[in-house]
Length: 157
Image 1 (tube, rainbow, N blue to C red):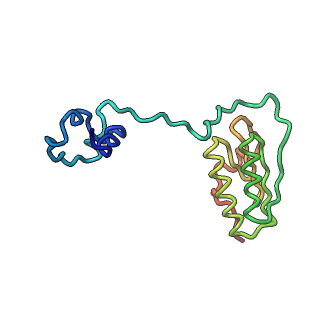
Image 2: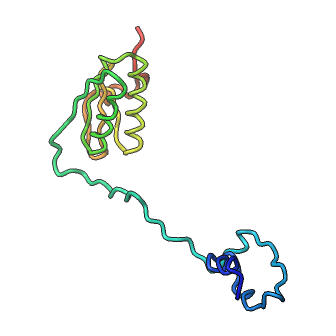
Image 3: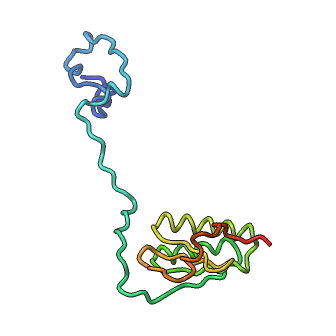
């Protein structure tokens, strides 16, 4: 009868079956194998099932019927902005009620959102910004007038 440890190793693919035919008294010590060398040559990686499916590419909604206006007081309000923007809703962000360091942080967050989701992030006034999805066209005099202006977010007086 063959060694149970050997049978287990063969079952797990850690040893070759050819050594099982040898009688126990004739068995020579098996050469040590590295895990990479013990793997079968024809092995294929197991299929991987993703936990989440990639979202389908978004198409432009048939008609825009909502614009969200947010007056954040703390940086934690960024979650509302991100969720709405991800759903394709344009967001107006009024930073007048935030401290300057938190407002700068929120601006960085909104800029990252616009780049990641192919949207646009534009300043409307000194502390009011428009975060618009890819499918929304924004037009007006302000965009043309500010093309030669310094791109700073806050004016220093």
